[in-house]
Length: 309
Image 1: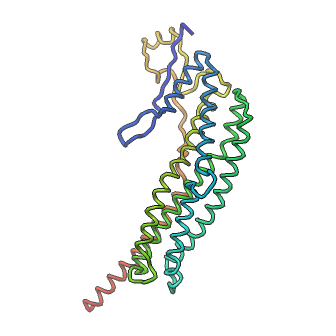
Image 2 (image 1 turned 30 degrees about the horizontal axis):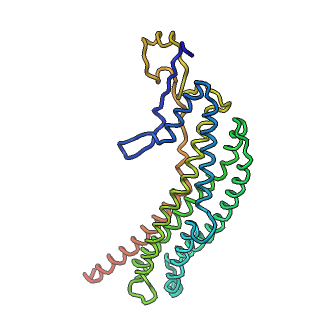
């Protein structure tokens, strides 16, 4: 160990702050430090960090579904239910085939489905918290725990997608009703109340999404470590870290550039890209464009008639 140098290439470890600014999150800094701990044989500190990530993840999940009507999930669902109930009188009175009726129906279904998924997430969180009370914190035990806990971040990610979809549908309904359905001229349309509800819901949505993303974030930190160091001991990892001897450094003209020694990291799949969500967004945007096209065609036709063409 005295005759070697630890080379860490951290170019693929970063947090994107802006388009031009990247830095390390506190957890990423800890993960880099954990590599040094393992190199020095300080396995206990490494295991403590993995354990802390798992426990933090569980507490974040618990806080988003705490009991009572005041938790963020219940607040969001209640506001969306109020939004639907406020818009319902106008939607019911719409005659003919209106896009607003289809959007309303989809929004109603997604909101009901969210309530069911919340219950499942809450039960899963409660179950994992009970298991964690007796958790084996050895390397083998923690590795199994990280694998077992993967269902919660997957569920939290699905809930983020669901909440975002509901929010987009609600805003789409407002826009469609006021443009296509001429809702502003109807006594059954409470535009001011609906906008206020959406504004309140947006504040809850942002806070809720943040909490849900924290669940996935802390699990990913634990998974990052156990995936690269499955035995809880230091090992060379392609594209990340390598123990390099003095003779190897000398053979490379005494270069201390880590990239010359650690190799190239395998290309990672962008786990944040949700194909289904992207398709849903495209579908919602397409509906809006179709509605605008119909409206524009009507205006053009009217102008032609006025010109006598």
